Structure formats: structure tokens, C-alpha cells
Amino acid sequence: MIRFGPAGIPLSCKGRTLRDGIADIHHLGLTAMEVQFIKVNPLTRLALDEEVGKLPRELVQQLPVSVGPADHQGGAPSLEALTSPIRRRDSLTTLTWSLAKDYPDLQLTSALARALDTELTLHAPYYVDFFGSSDAREQSTRQIQWAGVLAQGLGARLTVTHLGFYGPGDRADSIQQLGEIVTDLSAWLSKFSKGAVRLAIEPSGHPDVFGSREEVLDLVRRVKGTVPVLNLPHLAARERTTFDTTEQLEPLVRQFVDATHGPLYLNFSGVEFYGPGEFRLTPIKRGLVRFDAVAELLSERDYDVTVISSSPLLEHDGMYMKLLYERALTRRWTKQHAPAPARPVAKPSAARPAAPVARAKAAPAVRRSVRPIAAAAGRKEGRSHVRPHGR
Image (cartoon, rainbow, N blue to C red; front, side):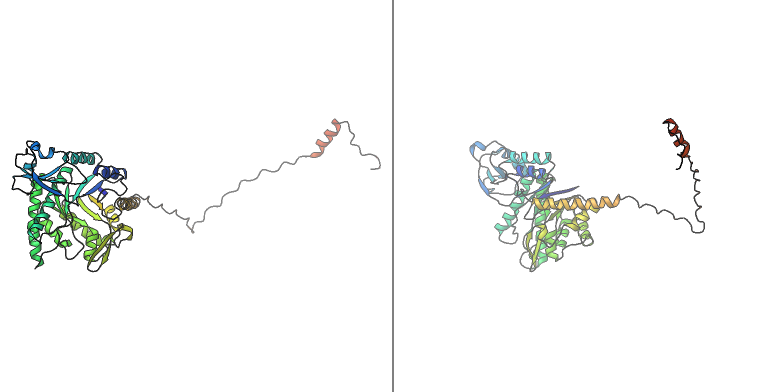
């Protein structure tokens, strides 16, 4: 199955809630949405007296993502703690998120997405730093975990994330450390969501940021519970190629499909190159990478793919990509079901000329005498037909 959708609430959506966006996506004929968890506003505080004895997910107008003892101070989220009654002197970490107020709000959004057959995924905050200070590393880890909590509440199947810059020193050491971090995150997410949400690793278009084709594929093969994101604009900028033909594109897609072991997650937009890496994302018609080859390849193979538009035009380019795919699918169907060419009619042989067609004899013309008729007419009128004397 092929799904198309935008990375965020559609630009044309009048409302700005997740449910408004999902409804608009359905009306536009799209079937996927990547929820953007960009701005993080955590607050850690002690539990209030009126909250003691309640489940964290029952709190109104709040999104608790972590509960623990007073010295917990925003530790790793725990499914057991979030599904157990709050105790006195517990410490709660809650999020303020513009797209959802509380867990009942998340559940309503999840139910609407299922009813409208809209697949949801969630992108964690874009800024990640695992090689800065210890506080930066802790904050980056928590943000990905909080994104996993929200993804589980929304019923999303993926938590998508970047892994940030390489650390100082040898690049191989940075890759090894990132592998250990991702292993811990994937194990935590699998336990928290009971395997319902997987961690998706996105490539980068900048050579100083982790995320080349080889690095992403090698990481997801080594770490259980992770999948790669085929972000074509990032890879095109990183590898300085535009993937104009299906011959160039098919080996790349095959590598990511084999490493995913399930539905492929593909991210697309236009892109401009500048210097050693990616300059900026653009609308598809203005970028250096076109979707035509992708549409042609998807129409010729039985892939299970979710295509997300990260273009500045969001749903407009999402619908444009769907249109290109449907055109390619129509061409393929027409070619496969074209009628067989008509057989040529055999010409008569020159050695045996065709027999002449016999002509039918015409019946002899009947000659009628006019004189008797004229004489009879004269007698009827009493006229004499004797020629006068002298004439």
C-alpha cells in the first residue's frame, strides 16, 4: 500500500489542532501525517494533594511524561509509573504542548486517525547533541523518550529522530558511542510501548552530522527495534546526486527496504545544494531532485511505502506526489492491458489473378409505339386525323 501525507498540520487547515489536521488530510485524499513534536516545554514539580491517588494519565489539562520520587527530577519515563496511582511526595514532569492538552486528548486524536485510516508517526525535536555537555546529552535523551511517550499515546508506529553532530576526535568513536545510545533508547522504547512504536533513524544532508547512507543502514542492522528513514533530499545533498532515473534509484530503495523489514518510510521534498552539504529544502518543482523517478519506481514494484512531504508546501506537494504516482500507475496499467496488434490482411497472389466478375446481361429495352396511343386519344375527343387537303 502507498500512503501520502504532510509533515505537520496542513497549511490550508483552518484549525490548528491535530484532529483538525487529520480531518483536513482525509478530505484532501491523503492517508498519512508526521506529527511534529518540535517545541519542548517541560515542568518538574511535586504532586499536589488533590492529585494523590489518581493515575497520571487521568490528570486534566496536563501531559505527565515522568513520575517518580522527589529526587527523581525528570528521569526516564516508566510505563509502570505512568499507569500507577500518584503517591504523596512524588515528582511529576509534565509537558505543555500546543497540539494536545492531556492524555484523553491524545486518545481522541488516535481514535479519529484510525477511523479515517490516517497513519500517524511522530518526529522528535530536531536539535540533538549527544557530544556536548552532560546536561545536553541528558536533555537530548529525554526529548526522544518524551517523543516516544507521546507517540505511544497517539498510536503512532514510529518515533523519528536525528542523531546530531559527530563528537570530537575520531569519527569511528562517535559512531560507536551513538550506537550504544541508540541501543539503550530502542530497548527503552520497545519496553515502554510493548513493541508498538519503533525508533526511526533519519539521515542528514550535512557531512558534519551523523547520517550517511552507510552509517544509517549499518546502525539499524546492528540495533534491534530500529528502522531507517529514506530521506531522499538529505541523501541527494550528501551524495551529490539527483537520482534522476529508476536505475539510480532502485538499488538505494532496495537497500532501505531490506533493512526495514516492513513498510518503508520515505521523506521527500525539493532541495538545493550549496557548498559541501544541503542548503535548504524547497518545493518539489523548484528543487534539484524530482519525484518522477520515484513515482515510476513505486508504480512498477509492489512496495509498501509511506511518503511524507517535508516540502515548504506540505500538503500541496503531498497531493502533487500522489498525482505523479497515479499517472505513472495509469501508464503502467495501460501498457500491460493494451490490446494486441491486429493481424495484417493477406494480399492476393500475383501468379493466380482473380477471376473476372461476370456481368449480368441487361434486359432489352421495351419500345413502345406512340402512334396508337395518340390515335386513340384523337378518337376519344372526336377529332379527325385525316390530313386536310392541300396540307
